[in-house]
Amino acid sequence: HAADAFRTDLMTITRFVLNEQSKHPESRGDFSILLSHIVLGCKFVCSAVNKGEEQKKLDVLSNEVFVKALVSSGRTCILVSEEDEDAIIVEPSKRGRYCVVFDPLDGSSNIDCGVSIGTIFGIYMIKDGDEATLEDVLQPGKNMVAAGYCMYGSSCTLVLSTGSGVNGFTLDPSLGEFILTHADIKIPKKGKIYSVNEGNAKNWDGPTAKFVEKCKYPTDGSSAKSLRYIGSMVADVHRTLLYGGVFLYPADKKSPNGKLRVLYEVFPMSFLMEQAGGQSFTGKERALDLVPKKIHERSPIFLGSYDDVEEIKALYAAEE
Ligand code: AHM
Ligand code: MG
Image 1 (spheres, rainbow, N blue to C red):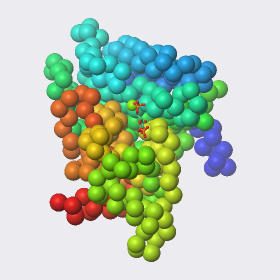
Image 2 (cartoon, rainbow, N blue to C red):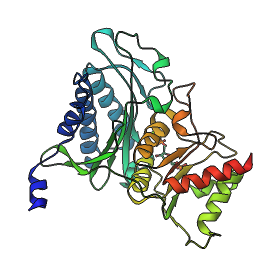
Image 3 (cartoon, rainbow, N blue to C red):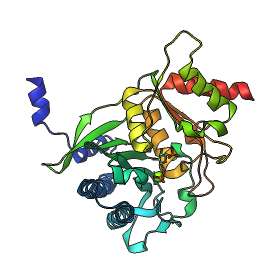
């Protein structure tokens, strides 16, 4: 049976990435090594989350594990973590060509009630022989070579793009391996769900307010959209990717740049959305075109199904 053949031909994330890399003759296997260290971090956090560690400890613990795993891979030169105010410049003897930006445990306010949380990461690469500087991570998201997230939910799912589509892998705890379960993910062109913290509505700008109004009271004869909001970006984006729809964390009067961080929240998720056939917009421009000036900079974000984001873009264009 075809299904049995699939079940016995285990496509681990390592095998998958090695296959992809073999299409690039110039590849030296560095990326596969880097990724195996990221995967190790994800497995650790997954097991810590399942043991029910306390929130504060888990945040700090996850960060330490990722920083140590990334440095010891010998393939990184600069790290930006949501948990560390300053970028970490890797010591010369352990340096490699990759810059990794990450949020080791996003959505941590959800830990104590068992709601899904996740790790988000984006990867840039410097040129051979270059010294790594902050400039190397203050790059538009379109320059990333890979991005992904790992969701610690009812199962542990790692979603990855190296710039040729998006694939999802589920941790098989008995094997300790991430196995390909969601091949070549494409987001539906139009969705039936919107996802936003509506408690901020009184402070929204015109286009955001109009869009959400249209979700609830459509004027084109379509049916109203459903609202789904977990408050954990990885889980909200994961659902959006699989079911379609739109996730927004807009600007508001109190936070003119929204809440989410450009480097390790907005960019990786935007990279994945585009690779899955969706779009991502800041209210001003394509999110991946944004050039961050500071490592912990924030930006409003609207991402998801192509047609839904197109509608939001039109509302902003009409405002000008
Ligand atoms: P955190 O980095 O402090 O965990 O905040 C990020 C989280 C995201 O996961 C989520 O999309 C957002 O904050 C939810 O914010 P709010 O509670 O304002 O709706
Ligand atoms: Mg975060």
